[in-house]
Image 1: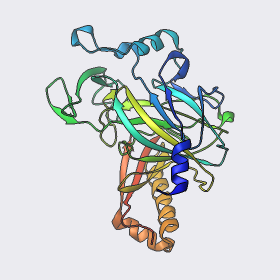
Image 2: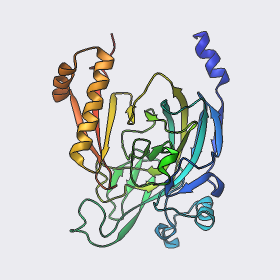
Image 3: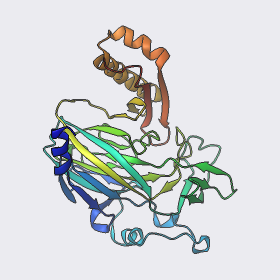
Length: 326
């Protein structure tokens, strides 16, 4: 084994951050929040998350159990303007404004055997067609890795965290958890499963990372406003990157590089994602910018991340094999 890698592995610490009333914030991001955990760059944290407002819990007749800490959070934590219960924030020593936080998502596990999906009047992508409220509770079969709808239709599960964010700049004040922004937050990208990495620009010393909004499955677009929402536990490894100075989140999976665009206008979000992808292709390959634009036209896929969070999302993806460094 490489000696430097062996030394790094021996000094890496693994922490557990449980979801409790004193370790969560509900419905907002805020650079003024005190951290609930302090770690070093390179450390791992197993983070427990919960999901759902009290009125969205399943009836007892379903046989689904609600996590006891979620009930405590409902009783003891003051809710902000959003609906997402976020575990954190985590202070990473050495992280400074202008750096990038590299968050490696090592593992994701279900914490319960059910999820929910709902839509509401004035929400979602088709509010005029569905001008009412409806919620369904969905069984999650871990052995088969399938989510079972009330109709008995099933879909495969690909768990991921919809919320992955550092805190916004303190001067911006408290921000609703609904809108994804330059600090990350409610990105809702279904590609960010276990084994992927997200890069988040840092706007406060320490980064102040939080996560939540567990999804068992979601389509690109998240069209009715929610996925199959559930409670997850994730293991994350954090690295402060002083060599990167990106201003919007980026990501990578085992197979693809991903850039994000975030804007109320979907066209603007698409331009942001594509511009960032062209920049990344040039940095990775050294080819000219106009050739990178041409390459993007036949090798980059633009996906609609979500259309339902006021600030819409587009993510651009390119196969890593195409831009493999020489």
